[in-house]
Length: 138
Image (cartoon, rainbow, N blue to C red):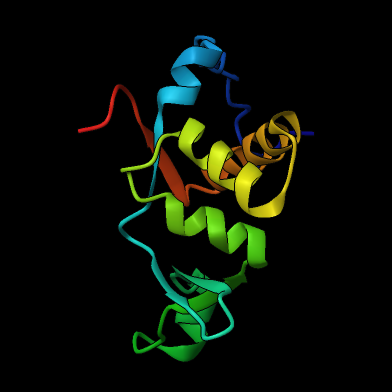
């Protein structure tokens, strides 16, 4: 039997593996987190921060709704500690400064603040909500 309408098998190209060189702890502590300038956010009266992420409509939504379909807005509400860290991610405070502020404000041991902050910053970075400026303060 001959397949007339069958798809040709595409050759799978080897995906390039991107390796990120390891960063030393000293360099990480001196890095300055900075918020993504493409994001809108606000600080509420109770001190919590709400981050607004605009996402364009899918092709199906554009087809159904027409060209006038608007961007969807996803909201991320941070808790008290997350909001405190978010406000310090202004490019002026180093990671070390934020660790010291967390330890002082929430009465944490340095190692506890450090581990929690590293995990939180990694999550924000993976979601492209923040980036890092390398080097010393301005």
